[in-house]
Image 1 (spheres, rainbow, N blue to C red):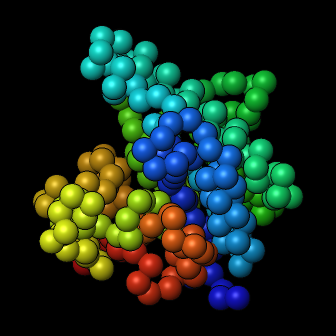
Image 2: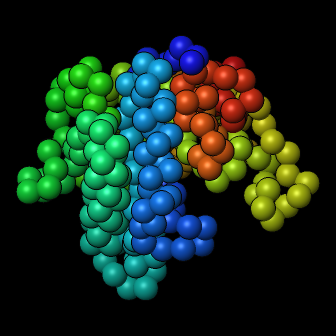
Length: 240
């Protein structure tokens, strides 16, 4: 088994990864598939923290477009991420992998509060750490939460799980002529307006010199390959 290139990583998983393509809610088989990949990556010696989205359950931005107060919609979206985090924790622990959920919103009955030093200690004890409720503040996406948590825990790379095998010039599902990039700089992502992560997240990674790898989560063994630093697993975004 390959040795890890990265000792500690932050994995960003969208809410849509928890359900079938085009579906909603939580599909346990999809969740088990994620869990198996995470465990396989942890087995090679990588400390793994995860930020989960909540779009499979609810999107605050969509509620706002239909009249819900924007901040209220965002808080509802944060609670959706807690549901996904608990589902993933349960599946991981059924597979005998110690896991902790830390949430930016105080929900003591179901999860620990986010405390940076506690999160790092869990990682040092080889526990999977799942960060829920985004940053705990409205108007910030879970992409930004992923960049923030990655820098706080001193992750060596941010792994952005996607539905495609990297970053393309256009949506490859709609445009068969879209070209795939093997490597990009942060400024190229911003200047080309590539739909990778939001501007705040990319800017934070650029400021902290935190590399990003965008890869296809549904490729078997993709997380383990990414933490091992295998070539061709996705698109790398870093300094030029």
